[in-house]
Amino acid sequence: MTNKPLGFALVGCGRIAQRYLDLLSGPVAGARLIAVCDVKADRAEAAARKTGVQAYSDMHEMMGAQREVVDVVCVLTESGLDAEHSIALTRYGRHILVEKPMALRLEDAEAMILACDQANVRLFVVQQNRHNLPVIKLREALENGRFGKLVMGSVRVRWCRPQSYYDQDAWRGTWALDGGVFANQASHHIDLLMWMLGEPISVYAKTRTALATIETEDTGVAIIAFRNGAIGVVEATTATRPKDLEGSLSVLGANGTVEIGGFAVNQMRTWQFTQPLAEDAVVMSTFNENPPNVYGFGHQRYLEGVVGALREGGGPRLVDGVEGMRSLELIVAMYESAATGKEVRLRFRPEFNQLGRRA
Image 1 (cartoon, one colour):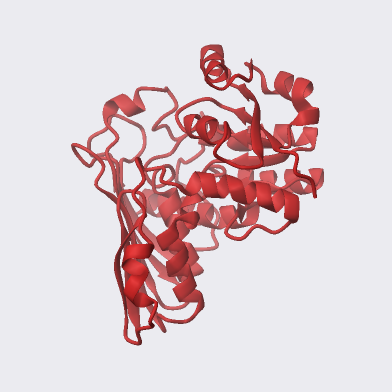
Image 2 (image 1 turned 45 degrees about the vertical axis):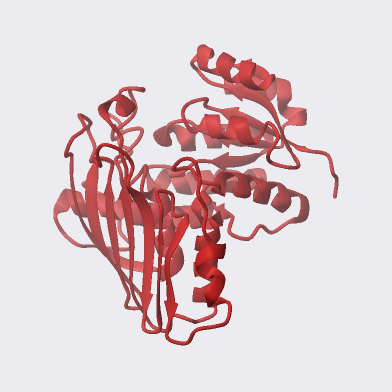
């Protein structure tokens, strides 16, 4: 094991990249930013000026020049292009980190997993909310059996994305490259719901485009049946006005109830069990966070986990390609249900929904 910092390179310098620029320029111990790339040269150059690294407008040029000092390539491009970019980058033999969702089509996700396996590199899918302190405590209670029989779980994403957000880039809100609130904003929360309740067996969903002028939905609800008998509910919208309201998660069982609120699944709201433990008295005050925005603190913990995993192996709560594909399958099934008006059972072959399809 070496103490030499791991080198990171960014492909894509859009909205989410700003978080990585900040974190990889000091806060994440054991990591350093090497280079940035964006097909829009002005974006790459702005990111380079902010961090003092080299800018590129072609990812292959970047990797050709920096391959020897880059250990991880962070793919932060449009969701519909993540698979294409990730697969192409595996030729350099460097680990791949991709933002959610890992792809928009199941076959693309499968191809990503295969390409990384063949190149003998790890594929990290960013689901940073698994690293939130109250979420970790909830998961611990589940693993310790404190809930007993699980009854219901729900997630609520009530965020504000005005038209100006979608107008920033032509790909936003498109079927081919982005998807709607289910695929984009709610994908983290859907991952959390599955992490808590287990394997889904069917879903029924309805969507609509309420306020935004986009191809996809800005509002949707879904009811999910899980193999263990629990029911899951997803409520998601970017049509909350005038500002973000919440990103929350609730789990109800025969022996307890936990609700995590805040606008980034970061505040413990309810922690109650039929058989209390001594530690329960301090959970509400200890496992709360107050992040400045919807990104929360999870990205830093996730990146620190990546560094630790590559140095020492393992990596608790790090989502790999196989795990990332599980939540993607549910998301695609939600779109299939919304398109057909019918309940969709997993496993299935998408036929009618438009997610990830290009003309």
